[in-house]
Length: 526
Image (cartoon, rainbow, N blue to C red; front, side, top):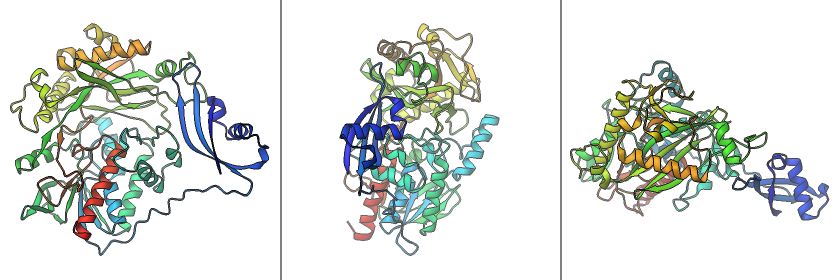
């Protein structure tokens, strides 16, 4: 086997036959000597006017057989009679934690406040029809967590947490396209993820684990200072050490932990809006062509970052060919998020555009918080911002919106462009109710982005509010080596809700790491 690096036009890179020809030319070999090629890495270089595709290709010659990954090494044994651990939350962190526990010989009991993923689909369709939030089954709560109905992005900036490849292979084991192992920025798509998530649950059950839906944890059971189980709202109890993987929107959990004397810390967050452009315009800008992406290129993405007043301003969770959705989890709050189907085929591109906010910024951030020293101070700040957004939306889920050009001129929009947000929009001057701390930094950031990408500022784009669930406003402190809470044995805070992850892959890896630490302690006493 020989590895070859190729730089090709998008048209050539889209054809296996033409890739083989390029390989034969580079190796100075007859075409018939190449028995097989395997693409191991693919990324698009759109920095220059001529768009290129970089490929890393494994080449197999006569007599050589390619290795095909069947994922058979990912084995989940029967743990019906094994020691038990409780996993609170069935998002990516909780699901990967449960699968890892099974690998290591521990029986997981998953407790999830929301519904199974297919029921969630029906509940979200009802939300789109009625504009009424179900506080226990929505875009944040339920099997698969907030990631189940998102773009399904499977990349992370952090390479130190654990094996990204292992996490991707687990997704493939349960039905994801193996192309995610190749693409530089892999994604699955909101239409594909639910089936994969369901198969993960079926594996957990067939291995002897338990999964309980509609079961909201209300209390930790503590004996001699250690967590030994949980109590749910129904009165049911489940015993075992606990991986707490509740996600960043379970604010009732933070309030319970704080009232129970569990040490928590406030952490920085980022808040802002969803910025929506026509996808065709983003394609033109990013691919430097009036024809846009043409026949061979995918819907274009972007990543932007700047500084304003000592705080970061940046794009977050960019969804090419996607949709904006209501991400509220309770009545009288207006929150939006973005998602994309696998084909990224809608007419719109959207991205979070957010401003960094630190706990020490609250006094200057235009929303009063009663106890500035509480670890829940930023969470309380966010709740008030979401209430303001709800009021600006006419006390509905018709999201407040403003044309990008009008936002920069400080005036309300007389009309709004068409949008992917199906519940509908309400024209609103965001400067009137969003904190100046956020709005003036967003404006600064947009002007910086326009200088590097001409055409980014346009009346065809609009800001849709409010994007406030980028990460947890609270961190649950834990021991770096053993993943346990720093003061409480038997409690393993993990994932986005604990303040240790920022996406599907980082949450999945963090869940695996917490599960490994728990299993080591439970089975070997370390």
